[in-house]
Image 1: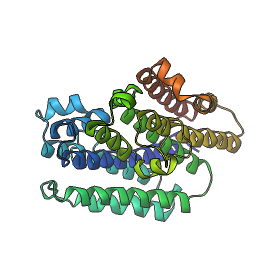
Image 2: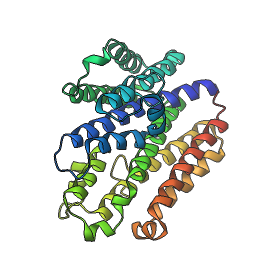
Image 3: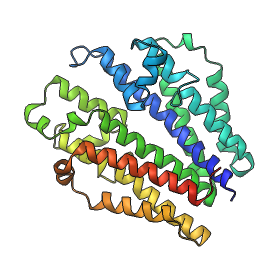
Length: 316
C-alpha cells in the first residue's frame, strides 16, 4: 500500500473519532451547565470543553469571552479550529475521497452523506435548545461510520490503518479528558469529597467518555469514587475508551500489520511496550508516582507511536 493511502485511511478514522469526541464534550458541558448548584459556574463548564480539546487559548484569541454561544459556534462550525466538528467531518470525508476505490461503498456513503447534511446546517439555527438533538445526530453518524468500517471492510492493511487511527485518537482523547481535571481524581477526594461538586465532576468525566452506566456495571456495589473512576478509565480493559483497551487494540492491530507485510517495524515494538506497561500497571503505583505526570507521559508516548507509524509506513 502506498504511504499516502495508509495516511488517508489513518486520518480518516482519526478525524471521524475526533468529531464524535468533540460532540460528546459539548453535550456534557451543556448538560452540566444546566444543572443548578453543581459547584461550578456555567462558564467553567464551557471552559472545560475548550481546555480538554486543547483550543482554549486559540478560542480566547479569536472569540474572547467564554459564552455558550461562542463555544458552540467555535467547537462545531469554526473553519479555523482543527478540532471543530466541521473541520473533522470535512477532513475525514476528504481523506476518504482520496482513497475512494480502497473503501467500501457503505463506508463512503456514511462519510459523504454526513458531510452533505452537516454542510446544509445554518449555525444560527443551532440554539441551546436544539443543541442536544444536533449533537446526538453527530454521534449517531459516527456510529454509522464505525458500523460500516467494522462490518464491510476487508481485513487487510487498509482496515488495520483505519483501526489504528481510531484508537490512537480515542486514547489521546481519554488521556486529555482525565488530565484536564486530574485533581478531582486524586484519592484525597474519596475522603474529603462526595459532595455535590465532586459528584458533578466525576459524573461529567464519565459521561464525556460514555462510561457512566458501564462504570456502575463494573462497580455495582460502589459509589462514585475517584480511585475507581481513574482505574476504570485507565486500566480496565473491558471499558471501550480506557487507555488499556485502546492499546490492546493498537497492539493487536500493529501485530496484524507485521503479519500482513511480513516485516516488523519500530512502531510495532512501541505499541507492544505501551500495552504491556498498561497491562502491568497498578492504580496505586500510578497515584504514588503522580497521576498528572503519568497522563502527560502517556500522551507523549501515544503521539510518539503515531509519529513512528507515519515514518514506518511512509505517510505522505
